[in-house]
Each structure stands twice: as structure tokens, then as C-alpha cells.
Length: 86
Image 1: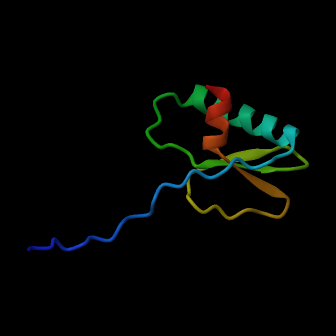
Image 2: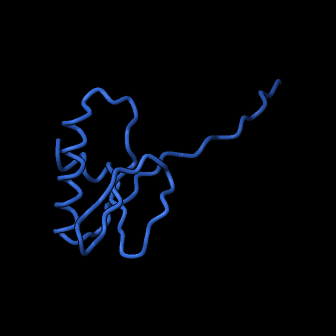
């Protein structure tokens, strides 16, 4: 009997549960993401999410997998936004 060498598995895809966010933060993140999609329809890079400040509701698109957030910021993943927008 011949055994094939076992290759290490890459990171398994785990569906992360949606975060419970303040509705105003979620609304602002949706607005920012929708604006990005409208202004850059043919963009090849898919963003990972939106870093948004909880009080000022200002945010920015994040293209890194592990973002560094400032105090007062919340990360909203695009997987959570896409399910609600499309």
C-alpha cells in the first residue's frame, strides 16, 4: 500500500458571526461602502472593511486583513455590509 504525503491545509474558511454594532455606526459604514462602490465600480481590489469612528461617524476603506484601529474606531467587515446592501 502506498501513502501520499499529506500537505498541510491552508487556513480553513470560517464564517465569522456578524458583530452587533450601533445602528448609526452601521448606517455610516454602509454609506461609505456604497459611495466607494459607486465611485470605483471596476476596482480589482476588494476592501476588507471600513474603519469608522463611533462618535464622528467618519470612516475610511481598509484594504489590509488586520487593520490597526485608532481609539474610538470600530471595524466593520465588508462581508457584513455586502449582505445588507446587495
